[in-house]
Amino acid sequence: MGSMTGEETRTATSAPVRGAAPEAERPAPAPRAWLTRLVVVGIVLTALNLRPAITSFGALLEEVRDGLGMSGSLAGVLTSVPPLCFAVFGITAPRLARRFGPAAVVCAGMLAIAAGLLIRPFAGNTAGFLAASALALMGIAVSNVLMPVIVKRWFPDRVGSMTGLYSMALALGTASAAAVTVPMTRALGGSWQAGLAVWALLAAVAVLPWIPLVRARDTALSPERSRVPAPRTVPAREAPAPEAPALRITRSRTAWALAVFFGLQATAAYITMGWMAQIFRDAGVPAGTAGLLLAVTMVMGVPLAFVIPRLATRLPRQGPIVIALGACGLAGYAGLHLAPAGGAWLWAVLLGVSNCSFPLALTMVGMRARTGAGVVQLSAFAQSTGYLISIPGPLLVGVLYQHSGGWGLPIALMAGLMVPQIVVGVLAGRDRTVEDEAAAR
Image (cartoon, rainbow, N blue to C red):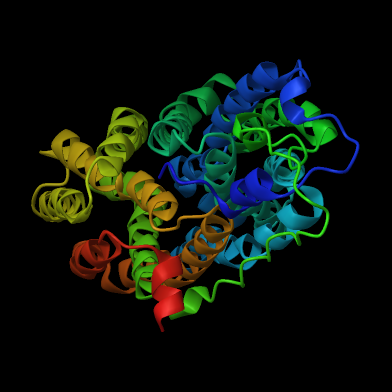
């Protein structure tokens, strides 16, 4: 975790331009500490915006279905759109980051989220709602991939803590949207359009901290430069160190295990966000209470998303954490099937604990690669492949729900997927790096 990235190593060993003053004699850039604090603010605000587009829709799913005339199967398609967009657009994030810089891409992502959330409730039909949702989800997708990259770049010695902070803010945003969307809709006159559109304001605020970072071009002001010792002047005849060969990420078994783990935990998360409130409502729980139960599930990630990454970075293997989270998920699904209303609060808590597989997966992305370039490739591969894997899950739940007339089969599907999630999570948690595996094959 504390090893220098390839970029850091090259900076430490390459020669300065002849005639230039040694970096040790130059004063540190004045805005360095201020920019670092701004990165922290940007990370937190970005994380707050990565799930309200989904959980606000889940809280008002019945109202949106009635307003747009959607069937259960079509609603299932809509709940499958987030992972599809994350897979399609997330794979473009590394290329965009190389060309424009991570800060510029995340800034554009926040703008896309704000625009999509503002447009989609007033699109007037299902196709327009879907297109506007895709715009917002495109912004979420690229930000999803680049958050571990930004954390690794700016805080290479605090990956666990910063991933925990980011994951905690993400869980808080997810829970807040689930909890307050229904009462806020009522306060705005009962219009589901207003209840969904109001979340565009939060995304607009998240644009602001990234603007100075875009102007500073964070690739040029990367904080590693201020932490690396000043290089000594070397003879001009010495050639610069050669670039590391491109990492063939698909040769790594750990990368595949992490991608499948990411996909299965995402399947569980998006089924939960899209359908759990409806499960409780169909069991006789009032709409407002169902939204609160979904919020409880999401808010469990606030404390645990900070604790789990810190714990994970202290363990050589993360398999025990994977097993504990999976057991909570299996218990929650069993309770949701046997007594959905009677033990609703307990099932919400257990499923919330289980959903903390997401911050664990993000932490393992940073731990399973040694270099910054490796993290970029692993993050893009694991998230894009994982989200592709997760696409059928919410759709199958909608189809099974509509054709079986109940929640027995959908819940059985959710519980069944938890078993392979535990298996691949244990494999992904082994103490090894994708660079070593790719080089050995």
